[in-house]
Length: 78
Image (tube, one colour):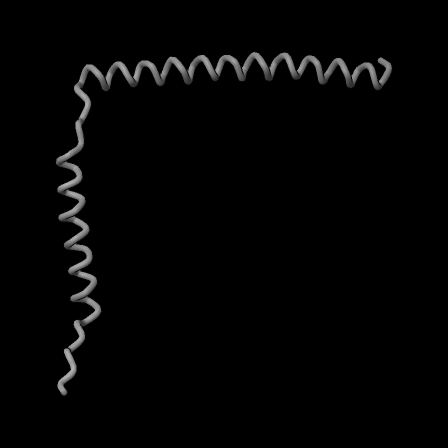
C-alpha cells in the first residue's frame, strides 16, 4: 500500500494563511461601517467622557491629598 504523501510544512502554512485571508475578507464585507457623522459624534462623546472622568480624578486627588495631609498634621501634632 502506498502511503499518501504528506504536504510540506510551508504548503500547509500557506493554505492556512490563504484560508484565513479569505475568511477575513468575507467577514469584513458583512461589517456595517459608521458614517462620517456617526464617527464624529462618537468621537466627541468619547472625548467628553474622558474629560469628565479626568476632572473627577483630578478633584478626587486634590481632596484626598488635603485629607491625607490633614491626618498627617494631626498625627505629628503640628
